Image (cartoon, rainbow, N blue to C red; front, side, top):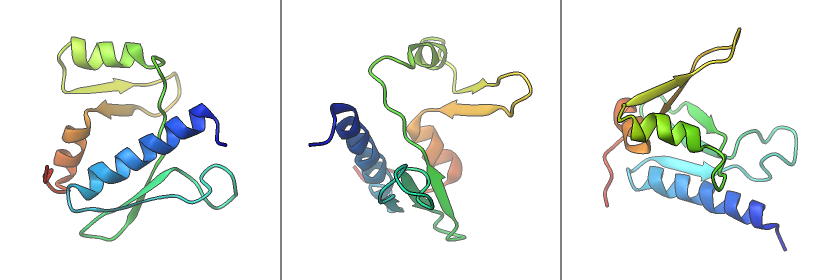
Length: 109
């Protein structure tokens, strides 16, 4: 039987695929993700225009990202950037903003 953390990860990956598909997008979980070379990431989204595949790595923690949520949600901002010294800047946003920004369909729910 898979560990509880693996089950939580599986649920998160399925939720990402469902969110994309509810917007009419092609999405799939990566088989054997993280277990075998050549299977990077957890979910693949397909750009509906270019058909380019975009790989997503999903992380789900009970409360491991509380500062990120505080900065983004409690401070009422639209986007959050984080950057370590000598590393590239990362952008963090809400799911709806992500799909809207890319123009990848509106939710059909």
